Amino acid sequence: STTKDLVSSDFIRSAFSRAMSAMYKTEVPAYGTLMTLVADVNAETLAARPELAAQLSETDTLERISEERHGAIRLGTPQELATMRRLFAVLGMMPVGYYDLSTAGVPVHSTAFRPVGDAALKRNPFRVFTSLLRLDLIADPALRAEAEAVLSKRQIFTPGVLSLIETAEREGGLTEAEADRFVTEALETFRWHDRAIVSPALYKRLHDAHRLIADVVSFKGPHINHLTPRTLDIDRVQALMPERGIAPKAVVEGPPTRACPILLRQTSFKALEEPVSFEAEDGQWVPGSHTARFGEIEQRGLALTPKGRALYDQLLDRSRAIVRPAADGSNAGEYEAALKQAFTDFPDEWEAIRKAGLGYFAYRLTPKGRAGVPVTGELESLIASGHIVADPIVYEDFLPVSAAGIFQSNLGDDAAQDFVASPNQVMFERDLGASVLNEFDHYAAIEQSSIDACLAALAGARA
Ligand code: OOG
Ligand code: NI
Image (cartoon, rainbow, N blue to C red):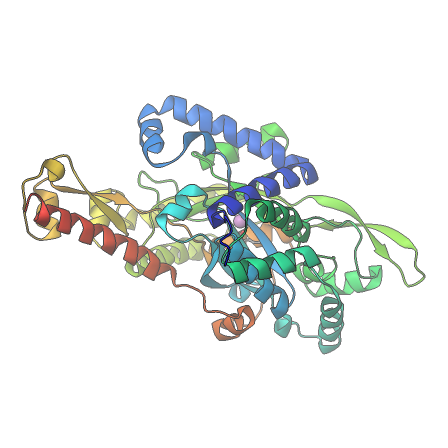
């Protein structure tokens, strides 16, 4: 048999995220403005903090610091989700985590397709937060049936991408020429379509049931609804957005500003009202508008253990019991104060966090540890003796409360709605055609293998 020269999935994912970024900047000019602001603030931050610049240049590629880290789509059917899983697999992106957003008033459940493993994440960390509409949460059976009928007729994938997915599955990857075509074909699925596939009347009924249902059902495909670059100073970008003519959401989601960043902080500019047209019963195109697309920024910190996460959830609940952030921003200051107050109970020094077992760390040898004198002992004593140091492991996943806040602020301020909490991971995984990976297992494994490597290197030194 002939062996073809296959490119790595990291290579295809990098090309895909670049192509997606270029497409989205042309589709949503305000997103380009946000990207410029992020690049400016990142440059300022690096200039003001040389120690941060030095640290980042060791672990990241500085010229790519302001590139996209994630995007999001919303799918309509189990078949779409299952095929999307196969498409993302070609890009080296696996489903990690299950997020139930019904509790937060959004009729979807979700996973994040992302690279797993340190090397792949370093090459390109691009992820896609992928939601599946929960038609089972729609109360009106007639409307549910109509939505299902519309969705069952659409084909969101091009024939070209479907055949290249099969090629990749059969051959174990794609050649460079195939990868080029794959990126072009795959991009079609994420493109914006300004002509709806429903009548103005049906759009209105879907929209009245929930804005998200209208967004998922009314169009030819699951347009990418935002992209998210990484910022080194989220508070500053949030503060500067209005100066650049973009309207930020009311508050930054996630933990408060801290000396030791944990998990994920994110904010967005509010979705834009965009012109679309609907085909009326008489075949005439009727102008209208639709609000779905926005831009977001993220700043990541330490991945928390289940114990740390439980503390995070408890403190977030505590602050939200005092003040719930209003969509119009009227109590943003009070919310920030309550959040900051609640989080005084979360240690804010790396060693304290580590010793309390709240976060995951990657361990490495110090110069003393690498000096070649064999030593054995417990991890803690080897840290105390200066042979081993710990670096925080970065959280690569998402947070359901934050995601709900991002959804809500971009669905319009009146979109909050009560659903009975009904997480259904079993149904989601059946629709996906695979189990989602457990995020905690993944961080625990990175931590453990770093410990094993250190202890083995120290014990074996010059042995
Ligand atoms: C996804 C919102 C969630 C995030 O960063 O938490 C998200 C959506 O609006 O479709 O992207
Ligand atoms: Ni997002």
